[in-house]
Amino acid sequence: MHEIGIMIEIVKTVEKFAHQNHLKQIDTLVLQIGELSSTIPRYIEACYPMAVEGTLLQDTTLKIEVIPGNGLCRTCHKVFNLLEHARICPECGSQQWELLSGKEFMIKEIIAC
Image (cartoon, rainbow, N blue to C red; front, side, top):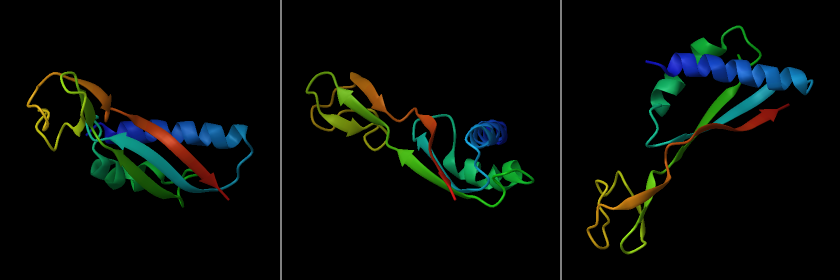
């Protein structure tokens, strides 16, 4: 499970941001995770309490927004969810597509008090 290492780095990044901006307390941390990324949201949620223990983020709320894994069919130009349709365009049956979203992993928002 590489998620604990990822969360530790996120905590360091947020603490550095808080220090640079003179923030004393953070209420909520919002992450965006693509459904095609190698990071599993439920594992992030599970290791979050351990990663923030004893840090500025200890009493924060974690929110995760999952970004759908969408592709654009190169044949008919329809946008479709790659996971829901087994990477096959539901409109024309093509397997030729361009990835539009779903690989992301980012800090979307830091809500400070």
